[in-house]
Length: 173
Image (tube, rainbow, N blue to C red):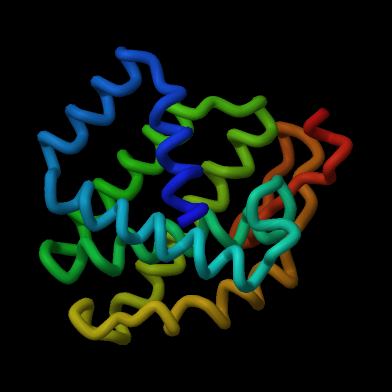
């Protein structure tokens, strides 16, 4: 119930222009958008369970949440469409999220980087598993391992290919 309240309050905070962008995404991809909403709810709940202290700030749990979010969006979209279309939609959706709910530059870089890690991870798994048989459990342990090995992003020039990243709390104030 708390998750719905968070999402409702976030949507209420949007301007008309930003709401219109969200409506356009829905009109262009109604099934993908609905599936993404479900993936978002599921991701919030899993991240809250796995990382209760850092899932909603800029810590390691947030990195896990962003990567898992992309994996779940792609997993559900792949069940009704092609991996390529799923990847394109997931990128569009997660980039739009960063546009609709802007962060400071370092936070945005972190979120976009972790989203890419999630999309890349899904695509790495794809050749070995038929897309119809993916399950949430396929991602959680490996992403938890990646979270354990996550790097601290300290400035906009840092590059951590293949690793999740998070921020030190004092860096975002």
